[in-house]
Image (tube, rainbow, N blue to C red; front, top):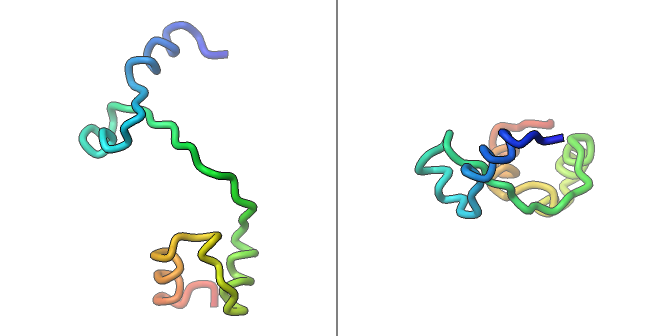
Length: 73
């Protein structure tokens, strides 16, 4: 249960503008609405090893990094 002091502190620090996080990284709270994805490192390794597309599991830059540095080989 969140007590009153914490609730008031959160009210003062929550933002819906995530750009403010870059301006003041320790001054705001941002709750991101992100989809839940059924993902595991085992599944990612399997997809990469078998050359299946996995852009639905990871951002393209991450996939490129993994391939460039021969991770999960």
